[in-house]
Length: 234
Figure 1 (cartoon, rainbow, N blue to C red):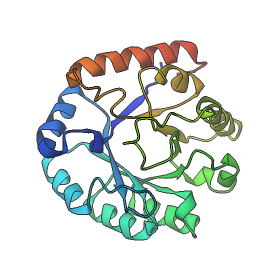
Figure 2: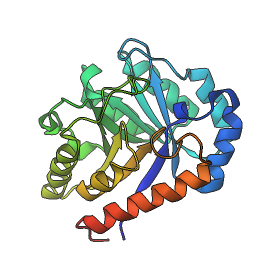
Figure 3: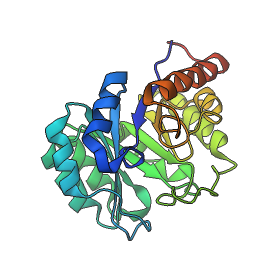
């Protein structure tokens, strides 16, 4: 059966007791840490700094799944390569030379992903999709996660399905990651539509009132429901 990767969003963890939170995540066996780096310009938020990521690298061997939301992608890419991030994703919308940045990451041996805002068309991937290891689809506008009233875009499932069909049509090995209100309620449809990797936060793995372990069990149930509803081979 297809394996769905789980990438917990660090900014949804207890930032005051971050080391303890990381140890909890290690204990439940998640796949990687999703690290959002936001410069305050691309989006009105700045939850984690580069020095914090450097300190994280010293306390865990978990893979770093870095999502850069910046107007200066090259700066953050080079910093994350120096730290040893295993996967680096940057936004198409803030990149003048997307192909060059893809090659910068790939030459280092790290995996590379390109992120798309909700309203950005999949057509921008026409020439770069074969070069990517993953595509991150934002299902809410990035940086506004603290706005509890913002809902996942109405076309979330369709966009995932359309990208999945595009990848299959071109016989590519490119993973689809989804981010933004990836909740226990929305996960079954996203997985069924073709999502391979889930960025999980306050509406799934970090639901208040439950332990991480309790939420992980609920998360696994939601993923299983999605896998039953999808058409997967392996």
